Length: 480
Ligand SMILES: Cc1ncc(COP(=O)(O)O)c(C=O)c1O
Image (cartoon, rainbow, N blue to C red; front, side, top):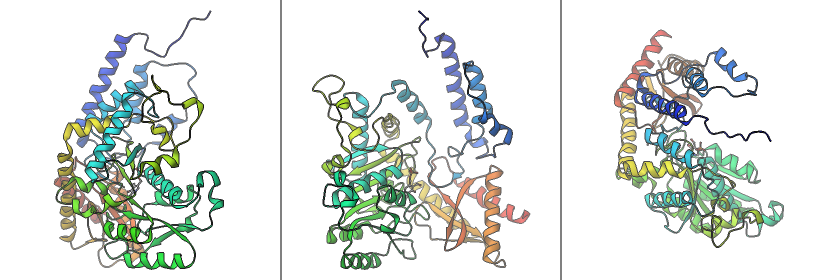
């Protein structure tokens, strides 16, 4: 008989030495992250290394780790850096790194069963409900991110509001078109959810916004009334708690009122903005979130938790369970043993096998306490105001949208160039900032204009980083 093989190290002591070295190196890396360029282009010869043939035989771990240090670690997205402000991407923390190691050690499948990871996830979801002032009996599930959380919220909304057994009959049995409402500024994960749920993008009513980029309640009401008259089924109103472009927060209470008046599901996409609830100074901005039937948000954005960590909350547990529950003999629950227990997350979302996302969240919230998160969130908002002031004090810099939260949109404008040239010039400025490793803002289009977009979900940023950004922009302009 052939000898039996295993994937464990053949020499644990040697393995331990390598493991300790990796941990030390990574802690040094994070400690000194400010000294690194935020981002650097990946040379072609490095990219070619990832076109290699399948390794048929193993290599030494030491060599693999050297390759990681040479060809992978130097070319990150850059989000742990203090001057990364692209999209809405949080830093992750050093303790999060350790938590991921612990979670990977236990390596549970958190689809269900009687094991502790389910209880940790339940705990974390209870804390989220507490932070958001949400119904303590509400249901929830950790997911990869707000995209999937939006999908889950809309799936439950669709199934509940359809008024018949949509799981069995499918959408073709629907007598009326099911319509979804939200502002023009909604994140495109809503569009994705709508088409994945078979509703078709045409059933997404995008309502105009006011000059603060918040949904126009008057237009929303008019549209719902017209759709009712035309025989459609208004199914879900989506409120934005922090839009991706500008950080605008819709009037959630007014949206909840409309959803009550017309009996429409109310879903809030609070991907990052929901966390305003943690800061006494800004928590009132998201008043009304607690009235939502479902909420989507991310721990990996403004809670700075290591990727991936999103969450969906559904007020009514039966609605949530009813949408995703599907029994099978091979996952039958038992009264005793490993397949007992009440918490079966695999029945509350599309995934059956799920990782132990909750541990890093549980450890991080315990590490810092909710209050500190609130203070750092407010610090980011103050930094956005600081940056806004710097821009307003420069003759040739121009804000492209009001700064309402943590997102600043601006551009260089010498007052002499036409819009086309300004768009090109500002795009060039952004490339220079990124390619020279100075800072990573992302971009968006505001009223047809190319905007350099700084979204601050970064606990490592300091005021001096924003001074450096503005000085660099002005210097780049001089060179260009
Ligand atoms: C408002 C909003 N909703 C949804 C999402 C999607 O979140 P995720 O990328 O975590 O899936 C984002 C991402 O930036 C967002 O800003």
